[in-house]
View (tube, rainbow, N blue to C red):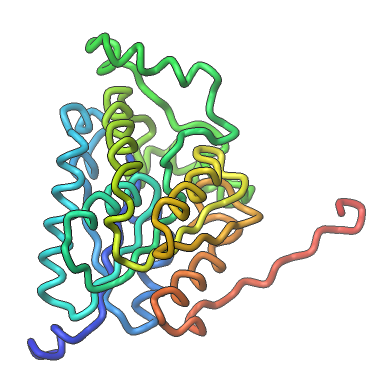
Length: 276
């Protein structure tokens, strides 16, 4: 492909979530490739190593990284879309606020504007007190625990096995000090959403265990006519790998005006009559 062809091509920037990798986004990279677009990834600061690497990373570092990657790729593509998961969604919103004329669209997957999912422990609201004690904020570990954001029993068992083997696909825990940076980012995102000029699709699970649909509803309301929402009925937080992953892919492709036929929809197996 020559330079002119590359400049005219459609590109997609994929942004993973906190403590994660591109595994967070399931098969979206491959699906976008089958749809004829070039998908690009990045690694957020503090990731791809060990959880302790997140210590000292600030929310500004994440936003600066995504903004810089976007500007780099925007020079290569006539249209550049952004598809982001969880924390990556919040980071992408802040980065796009800085772009005067974004060329493409946004897809925000399970954006945690509010940390109020059904699995959030009652004492979670007291974390702000611990933030004031630097030693505890840096030493306390927020561990990944079942259901790992996954409703599908088979996928959950695979994720659990990966954690037990120590596979390099997701951090088993993150420092509480890192959650402080997430909270800072959440506050930024909640302001100035009318500055987003990119048509935005927000996909959220009704049963999200980390962040309730209130987050998606808030973004739709504050973005006005620039955003719309799709609610999923059979997933938890990790929607790209859970039961509704095919619907996620199809909704994404439709929003980006791409060919949905590239998604090979899995046939759902009916439960035995005694279980229905």
